[in-house]
Image 1 (cartoon, rainbow, N blue to C red):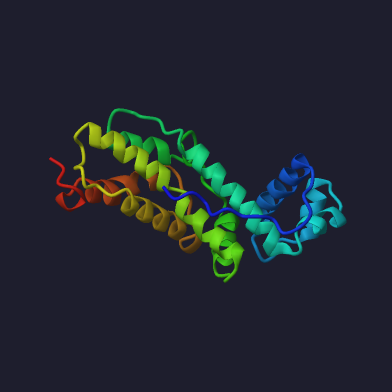
Image 2: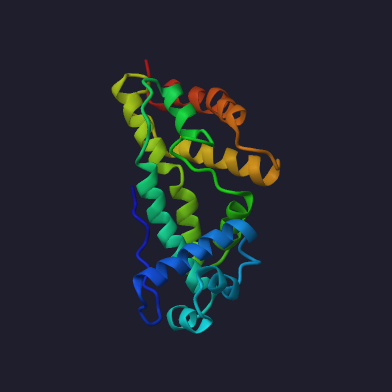
Length: 208
């Protein structure tokens, strides 16, 4: 899997704990208020830091969010490696896509919409937002299909990119367009009606 593109913050280095606090505060506020309503002042208040400290490190909101989304991308990679194996492809998908207790933490609607708004930017924040959107289900799909391949449930040619893309698209539609919940019923429908038929078809890798 492609690792997130390296990001070098343009300003003066700061204490690592203070920097992490500011980046995490930016991610928290992105989830709470979205991209457009997020302000540097609010981030500083959340992280109990001064705006002067902030501006020594990042010149504007986009520079801050580029660094914050880069941090988030690495967290996604680390967290999504922790996939529970249940013994079957269907069980693995149901468990690890579950809103509670699975490998994939479901993000609030404002966080997802904030990422999409940020992704429209032509600069670094747009690139990192797109990378984070892509990464979210990629490791899960790769790991689950690897287990299914060993059990003979899918063929050698089964591609993890397709189920990752389908899962991401379905969740974004459910949350942002249908204004619905990613609950157990939604996950079961996604797995049984979309993912399993695609993954176990001969077109997905000549599964027996």
